[in-house]
Length: 66
Picture 1 (spheres, rainbow, N blue to C red):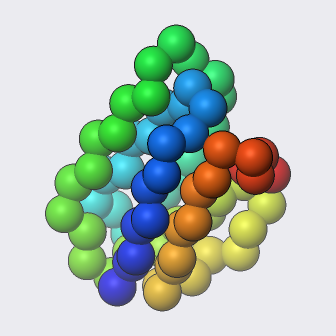
Picture 2 (picture 1 turned 30 degrees about the vertical axis):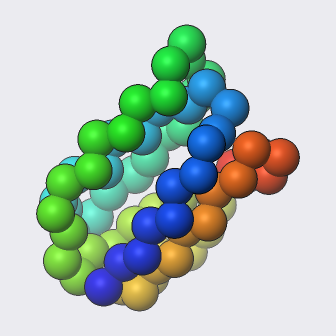
């Protein structure tokens, strides 16, 4: 179960696909693109974050992803 709270961000691209193990490289781009596909129990590696089957993402403009 994953919860995504996507708010207006600085230019970024997110491509979240159904997978049991995914790595996301967040780099700046011209437009904010969101490609959200149906997800079930999945494990995510976000930069230096540890994998978790229950992930909550709260992305805000003034909070850089590290």
